[in-house]
Image (cartoon, rainbow, N blue to C red; front, side, top):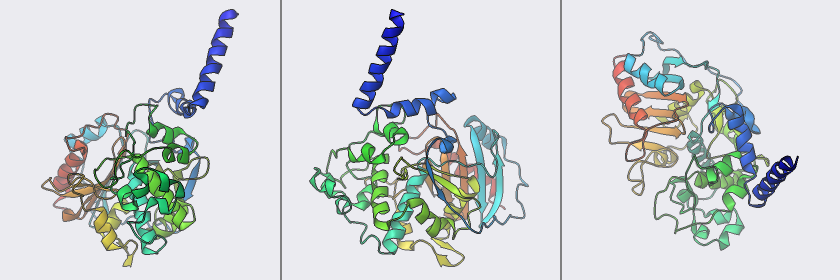
Length: 379
């Protein structure tokens, strides 16, 4: 009986300390991972969090290529996709769907977590807000939107462009495994403002590239304030509906309804491919310019400070003989654009050990580009 009292007392003290020091989100994390048999965030997390709907109105199905699903994937591609726990694999060529395949119980309608592919979507919303003059300039200061940053050392100088290009100088360790670091607090916590506004800046913005989810979340706060509506509804109006997306999507939010703009759009592989096709079409759909071409070019132009691997929300590979650029999310979520071959490649899944080269790019992206182009180059 005495031992039980000690256990209960110890547990109560642990809970109290967790709340006192701001680690109460750990309980949410445990309930959404370990208690569900998972070790980390998952592509099926969508229903575990509050969410805003990204509506579509008149779905337009992909036109099928005459060779749609006529060619079997070779063994080396299948092996790679199976070993990396792939959920969906879609290939678009010349604006038509050429191949799609699903594994592990997923299908055309399965909505999976975009993870950081949402960063590029957030930057797209910035571009639209600039185009509509809801934001005056990409070099606008973040502190113009949130006065409390006017007194933050270095933070009072950070621009929206700094945030989009990952040159914010934020004190943020981009670690996905450590539950005590800011990514976990943002993902499992109840308040995104508490998770990111509390962070300091460690250096002058614009000096150095450092990939940080906190930067895109701050950018999301600025865009949200400028447009004066939810980001999900803005995304719906400006992109989801005009693109004729096949399904509504969901965007995970915190308890205040703020979208997790560094992450967490839940959609299907076919609709993700439409985002890629928009970039191949230089921002047009049905001769309507949905996103300004100058802004698109800014997104897909690699910066010097990133050593030519990152633009604004998009990763770029001009080193590979087959040049490409792409949306990239944790565990191998890709929307890959291959302009020379008018091709979009989408891969979704749960690649827990996704090896990267010395420049931070996943090896699998280059493999899929090279092998898929070779397979379908005569189609």
